[in-house]
Image 1 (tube, rainbow, N blue to C red):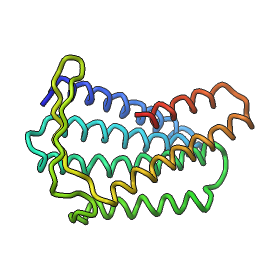
Image 2 (cartoon, helix red, strand yellow; image 1 turned 90 degrees about the vertical axis):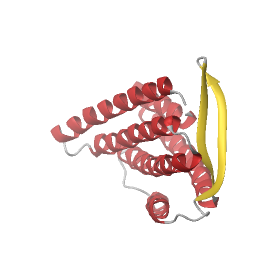
Image 3 (cartoon, rainbow, N blue to C red; image 1 turned 60 degrees about the vertical axis):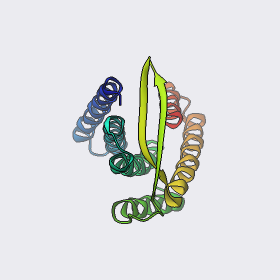
Length: 192
C-alpha cells in the first residue's frame, strides 16, 4: 500500500475536476459550444478514474480491490464515449454511424460492469502486482479481468486511434495551433 501515491492521484483528480468545471462554465455561457460540455464530462470521468485508482492503491485485498477495479473500467468507458462526442463536436459535425455504435457498446459495457458479476467481467483469480515508484513499494491488489474487460481494452485502443485520426483530419483542415494542442492532449490521455 502506498498512501503517498494515492494522495498524488487525488491531486490529479482535483485538476481533472477543476478543468471539467471550467469547461462547464464555458458551456453555460454559450450553450451552442457542446464541445465544452463533452470535454467537461470526459474530465469528470478522468477524475473519477484517478479517485478509483487511488482507492485501489490503498486496499489490502484483491477482493476489495476488484470493487475499485470495476469502477475504473466504468469510468474509462464513460471517458472514452465522451471523448468521441468531444471530437465530433470539436470537428463541427454530427456523430457518424460508427460513433453511435461505439456509444451503444460503452453503454452496454457499463451495464454489464454494473450488473454482471461473473467471470465474463472479473474472475475470482487474484492478480497482485508489486513494483517501486519514487522509492515506494506499490502493491496493486486486483483480480484477473474477464473476457469482456479484455474486449473493452481492445475497443478502447481502437477508439483512441480513431480519435487521433479524426483530430489529424481536423488539423489538416483548420491549420490552427489549437488543434495541435488538442492532439497533444489526446495523445497524453491515450498513452496513460
